[in-house]
Amino acid sequence: MIACHPTSLQKTHHHYSVFESWSGFITSYNSSIQVTVNSDISLTAKFTGVNNYFTFDGDSNIPEIKNAILSLLNDCATRYLLDNNLYLHGQIPIEKSSSLSLFSWGPVSHTIKWNVAGFDNTNLFLIHELFHAYQHGVDTVNTGRNINNEIESFMAQYKYCEKYNLLECLPGTVQGWRDSFGAYLISPTSENYDIMINYVRNLQQGAYTESEFPDIATKRNIDNINSIFTCY
Image (tube, rainbow, N blue to C red; front, top):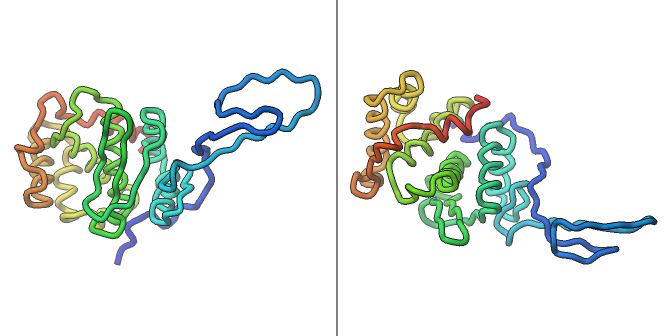
């Protein structure tokens, strides 16, 4: 059985913890402070995670989430995806879910729910939801459901899987992905875009219907993919 995550990646520490407070010479909860001194002082900055769900350095008490984030941070494109979400949204809590994985947004906060024990139990589906979060940050007009955002999110999974030889871990067939998403990367025509749409609509019967996920003419592109996957 193929392992549905890159096995050659090594755990490293990254710099995405969240500031909490200063202590010692000054007590403050503001991340930016000015200090003027004429002798030695003791000053400590404390950094923590967000609730107990997730932070971008993989500091989580949920092993599946921690391991997935550490893995994604070691790939140039998915790390850039995390970087951009940090810039656009700040911290996005990732919660374990007993149902389908999804990205939900609101006027104040956003949440990714990830079914770590079900069908989408690999970081490949976390990439999908992280890409939806990125889309929501850069496009404030088309914030509802549409098939075009799904195409981009699946394309993020496809490119990652092609790089690490993980296409067998995606729903459908390896040849099906290459004949649709791979074909569009080689020849980005309107006809090949339609082939991708048909492939996605047939992945899970009834999951991506035309009524719930319309095709928006102005979004028939993969511009967001081209922005994130520049290192591939």
